[in-house]
Length: 195
Figure (cartoon, rainbow, N blue to C red):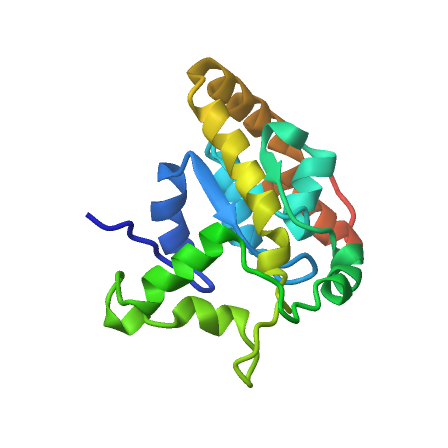
């Protein structure tokens, strides 16, 4: 069989409620400084799942303020490093990582269906068809592979995985709906507690 990958853009809460509890590991792949959907990140960790993600937005908050390394397998550059990484990654003549090149070849030859031909190259090339890395996919890929290898290694140790999943859930209190509603009422609406 083939690997089946679903990309759910702007998932509705009802979809999240079905997908998230089934995941031991959720991959939140986005460029630092771009949108990282808290609608899936927080429920993933609250359900005992762990994350592979750049530390940005809510994922960074989870890592810094809540459960730390128990929840997140970090990869990629931070938001403050994006422009510098783009400049350093001017990909004129740069070779693709072997795994990325193999993936591109598989898509280009129709291994995943004719409708998927060229889809990976579209992500990696600019409008003129020249290899570009504005989203830092190639830049971050080696770090992603290291994070994936670490996750794979920990997953083969059920007691370690379970312990870190429990630590991650236990550290998520800051992200409870009660705290969020109270903080929003106080800071946004200027309301105070009457009880």
